[in-house]
Image (cartoon, each protein chain N blue to C red):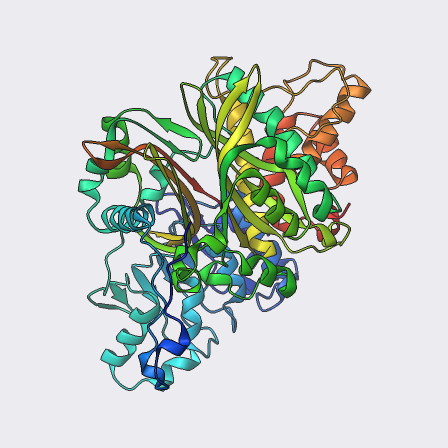
Length: 144
Length: 451
């Protein structure tokens, strides 16, 4: 990667204000997409649970604590009817992209399920559908 | 005491009336002194209650000279359904202690004639303070009050029971497990600076690796060894702390197999606890496969310590098949979370009950079945999937017994001696031993878990 060329220090007079700020690194669109998607997912899961099905792709699968839910309908039914009211507190978040094909999001932290505080870990694997990222594989585990 | 309890249990109301317990005629007529202010009496009593009366909804401990809520609070999780409680005429001094029983959704509460009541001159403040800790109370000391919260429907009972490692296909699972076994063996070397570089063969030339670390909000104290934690922190790419690396994102992104293994060799040495592994094969499409491994590990430096600091780890891999049964990693994402001993125990308990679930499933159906361990051969390489041996007919071969003891030890975390004792007590019935273990978990002495 070629470095941007900075003006030499002798090109400026002595006032410190004349120094340009270090240029920002080029924007990582995948980082931006990852942050946007993760915020959207947890906001929807906690506060707009009825809309969560829209974040999943046509072919999708949820693995909840080792139990598979293999269609949009099954997944939706699980989130609406069986998963308690939730408040997620995210402590760790990271992502990967494999070209433009996969966007992998990894999150962990604590979730308040009704009155019980539990530890959760989740991996979302997204693929493009009509240009937007949609979840193809959702792996959620409660670890206590 | 058992007789007295039976006498005072009212089946129609599902209630247990322990008021003025010590003065019960059964005791006085036999000249037995039973006082609920004695800890050992309370422990024995509560154990009996848990055993036979754990579904009670009404409980009275009136008039027993009780001062402390501590023991009562242990009853809260054993008898979860109590919603009417009479603890009037005792010697409770602090109303804040009501917090200890706040898990109970108490609707009717009798508190009068306790020392803290004299602190209140008006009913409103009294009610308000009670509601601070027990918001669902709708009847307090003879008066109907409006609860400040409605008992929410307990949905967590609808959650599916956790199950062990999942895979749609046994063939894929076997290949992935073998790969992970080799990977973990190299990773757990005592000399990470040199040996981890051998992992280069596991990675694709253009692979990418990053990791992140943080504590749980509840346990910011339990970092374990501070130096190790700081070493991990330096290279962590946690979006929660984006400011720390966004100015130079390439610093925390390791690209290319060489860069990756160099960074891995700089990370602290580790000892992964294979018996705690959960492997979920998320998907496989064309020649790509995605899977997530979760479990516990400890710092390599602590592996012989009697009380190591546990860390939870989650590691996602995206791999590409490179031939018959071989694969190369394209994306490797690791998360680390130091946890307390209690949290580690809680994780293990979850694994044990998931293992029992697996045994209860009907006959082999391909999907969702754990692999049965190789009972005949010696299994030197640790098995990643937590399993139980199939039920054995009587009489039990001593070598099979030994296998069962080892497996039980691996799954429960107890040492071999205690595992053998538990199995013996249950006639080497693996499932029954597991259930008994879970029942008495909180009473097992800590030395049972020391190697």
